[in-house]
Image (cartoon, rainbow, N blue to C red; front, side):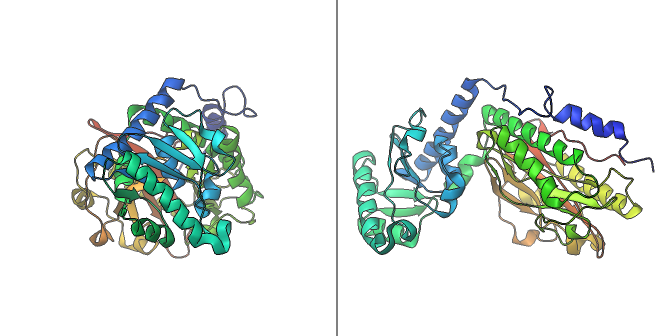
Length: 419
């Protein structure tokens, strides 16, 4: 087998994927403002369409990703993931209201989709303490008043995430609480052309981060140091956060799902990672790659596993079609050899947008537990592979694919390793 990655290939990755103006500069989006504005209008329209279809007067959104999707307001997203104090109330017609952390309302007043930004009424224990129940009653009364004003007599409200205290408070005043997650997931699953343009830019930033990881994949570097390069490129180029810390090397790659540590990477060891990056415009770049530390030739076992992972990815991409149902995909999907099955990734494909999303299609080994559904034009999915055996390193690969009426289109360009 030829040398896996000659030095010129390393330089090519740096030249192609880092900023052409210099690796010491952040990437700046070339997308015009109207692309962002059209994407915002499309997304809010998808939520309102879902409300009409489910016969709900409004959507009460606490999930920061759903708030970003509907109104493009990203204030304190990671903090509010575990402190649910920001919420949006989107009516099927109008208005769209944002309730923000007190004092932060100005953060989103410039957004055209938001008719009014108001201080939130917080009733979670960390904010209200022994007055939680009292605050929940006040909060529910405010929601009830708005439902009476703008709901047209419809008392059904679609909620994505709400603690029991809130559900009880709404039901006590006669509001019917409906699970809004199926509606929000369905809305988010079909992307517009403008959303795809925004997603391509996030992927571009992610690939620059991957190029930095690659450039520093030398003996003696720690897993944590390598992971920091993706954070750095994302943050300085306008991105948001990384959802996981999955970058490991050598024996730490198996079993999978280990988080980066202070372990030193050694020459010839496999470095494998999964980006899970929420980047510019709030979109997710969920890509995985594996390569050897020090750009060495792969061992025969490493090369065998890598070739199998590429085969699984490319085969499963080739069968993706708009209108293909998940069961038909499963029947045609790549069959994982028995010796790799104990170490497999449990899913073959999953949706992606502003985060990992519906649908999830399990591997053939687990498909009996799969949900129903079909692929549709406008979906973006991640196609996954994890290949390993007992006592071996793992190879993790993942690519992001747009499903079109003409067939699948890969959105990322960062190359597989040369075999």
